[in-house]
Length: 203
Image 1: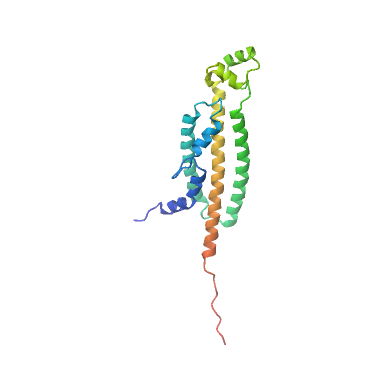
Image 2: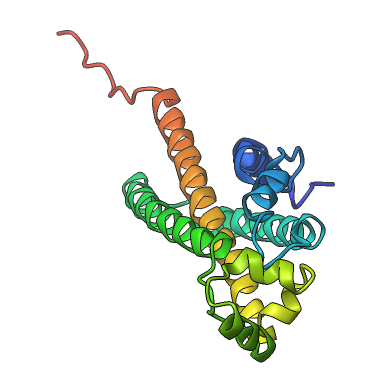
């Protein structure tokens, strides 16, 4: 009995190194989760990130990776080489833009401005100690970020860092996947035998 997923498995095997190189989860996951978590582990907005963020990032990136593979297999495997080349150019531009945005968001996530998103209790404390920075405010409230910042601000910032990570990951994965598809098409084209017309009879 034929395996209906045989072609898809073959496709994932060929582009699977994308997930191994860029994904935080996958068949052979590289230690990207600890790296990503370490980027924001020093942020006062998510002190418990080593446990909470790792779970969200692992599950979300794994699901996103599978969605990208399925979409690429359905839409791009039969696409012409010229159109794939255009997709690759767009993916490279998108990856560069999203990398800049992620870096900018990451900076403000790790170094939030004093007074932004503060709770009423924290604002009252800041009025008495106007020279306090974010870390001093956090220490004054027992390292409890829920007392320093409002729940809405924490939710927006935490959701934003995850979304920006997922968008950057998706753009990079699309870029590598299109590159692999282009290489596949190039190899198939080179391996095709040259079409030689029938030899003319010598008079």
